Amino acid sequence: MSQFLNSSLQDFQTSIMLFDLSIRGHHPNYIRHLISYWLAQNTVNFLYLVVSPRFLTEHPEVVQLADGADSIEFVAITSEEETALASRQSKWGRQRRNFQEWRLLQRYAKQLQVKHCVILYLDTYILPLALGLDSFCSLSGIYFRPRFHYPQWSDSPLTLRESLQLSWEKWLLFRVLSQAKFTKLLSLDPFVLDSIRQWSSSHKIVHVPDPVEEIPPVTVQREVFCQSRGIDSQRQIFLLFGALNERKGVYPLLEAIAQLPDHLAQKLCLFLVGESNIADDLNPKIDNLCQNHPVQIVRHYQFIPHFEVSQYFQLADVILAPYQRHVGMSGILLLAAATQKPVLSSNYGLMGQMVQRYELGLTIDSSQPSAIAQGFTQFLTDSSPPNRSPGLPNATGTQNHPQRAKIWGNPSKMADLARQHSPERFAATVFHQLF
Image (tube, rainbow, N blue to C red; front, side):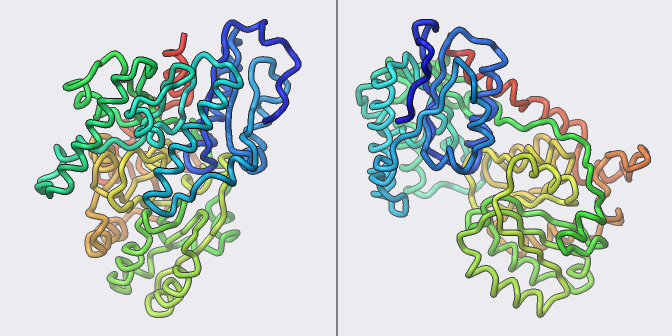
């Protein structure tokens, strides 16, 4: 454990702990926004952030936000504690790790003598909570992946196995909400609240907006950006961003491109940006596709720090989100909305609902390469030239092809969605229920 601050904790009314051992995805940004909000409030309370030791080395810009602050401190679990955690590669390994992490949470809550703990990824601890395991302090948490309400958006009947699984998930959540020390469920999914309130106490449930920052105007010229990345600037850039794995739908995406006629493929640049644990398998498939079709596929297998992310979205023409039966919210949709870029998205679950209700672009059955190919076709046959986003001003301040907004996206609804998901609203919702 790190050394505590020299200042006396007696100067503060109470101590709060944020607990999060994840180091990728939403988590670094969540912590960054929560720190910024906490410091801006000039609170009389003390905040501990209990994280993986790898978080300190991989996200130093986030850790530095707390440097010199009297009311906040990072505390890393030990390397030995992290090494002892079971692998998540198997179902039983994941369950074992969940209980190990629960014990770590309780150990640090007791050592730090905190009054309340906010779990930044509640889904990991659903089973320990449902079983009523004792907790040193009161608890709240961000709930990422409810799915028992998804059948209301589908015409397909549930299988018996699916029905039993969803019933099990509802029962577990009912048990969590019944625990006396569990005070607030912070759901990223706004549509699940009504479903939960039909069978559980409503005062413990609130929607927390997944945060997206206001995006400043792009400072890099399209031609310069394309040249630096080896992209043909005359093509439409379709961006697939984030962890490039099977869950993101990269394989059916490649199959879809293979189905396009040459006159459309030659208009397309697929831009893959993000870390990938399947790159060795992907690369031969990509090379073969490019040899047999006039498509351009540019690979950038690197983690992108948050301050560079927006330029990739601003300079793309279409944002791809062909996730495979993804459960929960997607920050990709919010970044697309904030940069006013249309999406080609899965129609499944919450993602499909967000795209349709806020008119963010096109939804397709992302499990079917033919459906993805049809989506590509609709964008590529648009007469608008590359990088002419709906209703956005060009370099001279005039509007570029506003008629495209009627087809591929609603700029007003996109902007409204981004405003609803400001970092300030996110952090205020997380902390408001504590005091």
